[in-house]
Image (cartoon, rainbow, N blue to C red; front, side):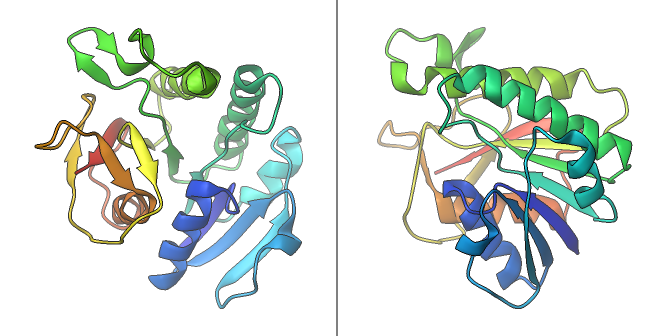
Length: 212
């Protein structure tokens, strides 16, 4: 499959890139600094700026799918930057009629009780709030789309480097918690779940989650 991966050098994006290449997909990695990506078979790294929607559309055209691992972590106004960038990604994908959009979501919009999302709990870490709010707004924007074939994958509350086990659970809008009361997933297993969805779509026009 011919994939465009936005944010391929980031924390989650780099894991998605590794998993996609390992499975034989052709990947166009759209990043700010393509020189930072090591050369690899089936990889084409290009400089991209989501703020330039017209140029982004040109770069996305002709791909079978777009995976967005875009985030605004490095900016002062994380929420505004993320939402503006995500709107540009949506516009670019639709303008060149890429068949599918898969999006890295956040855990903040998952429910821990009926009507109560992780982001709205008293103990949610302040340093992650703007990012979580941005991801929640992105989900809202996706759910307003009338025709776009989209999927968002939210991780568990904790996502960190670990093992690629291939053993995990999938859920929908509720936070997954293991037998020890923990909500976690390795970035490697998250990448498996995302590329599985790419290859075998089971959550068209829906958000889902992954955890142990």
